[in-house]
Image (cartoon, rainbow, N blue to C red; front, side, top):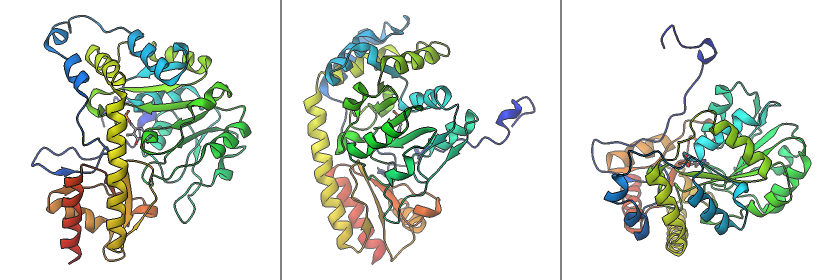
Amino acid sequence: MSRYLSRRFDGLEEYIPGEQPQDRTYIKLNTNESPYPPSPGVLAAVNTAEVARLNLYSDPDARILTQALAAQYGVEPEHVFLSNGSDDILNFCFLAFCDGGAMFPEVTYGFYPVYAALHGVAYETPPLRPDLSIDPADYCSAGRTVVLANPNAQTGLALPLSDIERIVQSNPDHVMVIDEAYVDFGAESAVELTRQYDNLLVVQTFSKSRSLAGARLGFAIGPAALIADLNRLKFSTNPYNLNRLTQLAGAAALAEQAYYDENCRRIRETRARTRQALLDLGFTCTDSRANFLLASSPAIPGGELYRRLKDRGVLVRHFTDPKIENHVRITIGAPDEMEALLAAVRAILG
Ligand SMILES: *Cc1c(COP(=O)(O)O)cnc(C)c1O
């Protein structure tokens, strides 16, 4: 840290992303990317002719993509906000809507406390239940901005829409943000509820179910006034934050939804098979609705399993948070990748 850095960032602890190692090829099951490539239309849309137009700025309103998303989710374009990955949108949410403080679970997406600290937002973190589920009662009448990942990050457990509605109803004076990064893998989306509640914002991403993590494309759906607030912040920082190629890729992906639906179905199927195999090996494993499993074995600590898998060329994610330090988070990859994971686990457990 230099002596020039603003004092308010003195103690800021940045988010540590999952490893993206370049030293060797791993079976990469650590950052919840899709094992499947983008659909053929995406590959065709991002072509040499479009690269040759990179001398021109992108459309700051991303009109084509916004309209396509609005059509797909059955809302008007003024209910759709787009930005450079959903991380970017979550950052705007902590900047925009948290004057009265925030509340999110003790175990969840590690970026929430970082954004809160970045923007000086005080926050409360109700613990999970012993089975790692969220108790919705903790968030009713919270009196502050509630941010919930549904399915929750790290655990994959999902709340039903009825619980989301109960929470949003009980907090009419604060925004509730539902981070649906993993919703396409088997949870109920709250998009429909955003028609009824002027304080509900749903954030989604193209990074997981739509195979575009590297393109950086996130979106929010919500009441027009909240979307206008987000646009005000985006146009006060970086209006061109969605590059031309990403806008084309996103629109092309939406035109091939069936391809992504089929990939999600395959991932759910692989998830069920992998989970059963881990249970058979004596693991406990959350009933994940996301494209990952959170698993722990009584035979080996989470950190050690992570390291020994890495030695064998299989990368999973380990968190030092005491609540889940004995677990590893395993992204659902292609079937052959999961076979390799299970073979490595069997070899390690002897
Ligand atoms: C992956 C993830 C994100 C970030 O997605 P990007 O759109 O790639 O920025 C946000 N929230 C949760 C819970 C995630 O797991």
